[in-house]
Image (cartoon, rainbow, N blue to C red; front, side, top):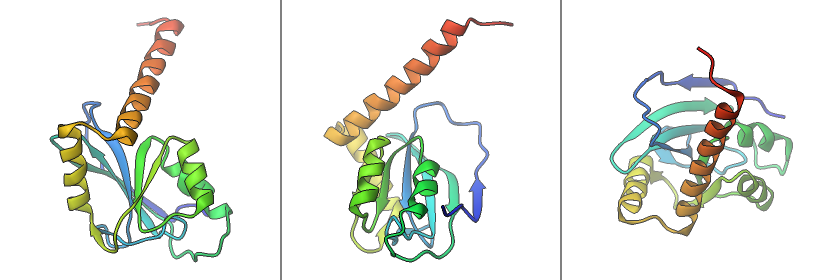
Length: 158
């Protein structure tokens, strides 16, 4: 298993719960220029129809496209809570594992700019989400509801 080499997290208390977490496979933090399995780093943004905010950058260092499944475990675990990961390419095994976690892999053209991808996602959210995005929003809402139901079942104590 390949563990992250560094994780940078933006501390901000302005997350009002409306953000959808989206990951981008990037080496320069500006463009999606990495294959999922060999990605050196991922930038995770919170996106809603009006705003986008960088939450974390997780670095893995240099990895080859060697078919080694072990390197996928920590990457997929790191993406927990994301609805999508934008990358240049994604192998069949990674696609299966990501979709099983409810994460949609999105293949983009070479050197696609992250700000433009975020703007396109925001436009889609405003216009009415596509089927995969609508499913992801419903899944996230269901997880939030079940978490609050579990808290209520435990009872509140002051």
